[in-house]
Length: 135
Image (cartoon, rainbow, N blue to C red; front, side, top):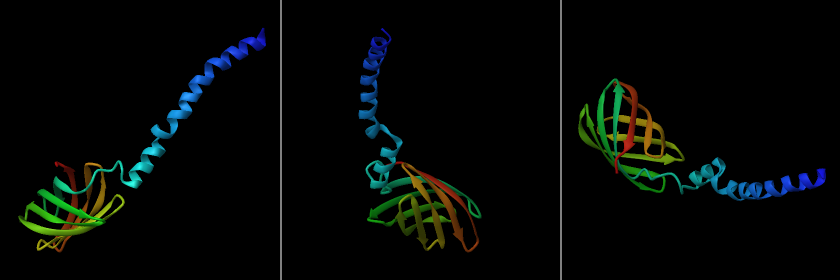
């Protein structure tokens, strides 16, 4: 009788374990991280971003990126110092670096999905910045 009870329990558990083993590769965080590293989950940096900066200078900015491979180019519109400047930069994994030609600012940071943040430097000081993708 004891053996029959054990066999019934095993018979009920096997389908549940089988389903768990089937779902594990597609739903695990390791699988999601692997897809992100291959670039299938991570959204593109290309497009329009809106952000804020504070420190030696404070204000808002709009950024429009074009991306070719790991190279970035585009325009940034700053509220302070006011103006629109061309930008060039690069991205490697989740790390980003770019400079605003004419504004004398360099930016470094990281991005994940629709958010990026980091620090900037100018001859008059630096600070922090953050942005979110708008389109």
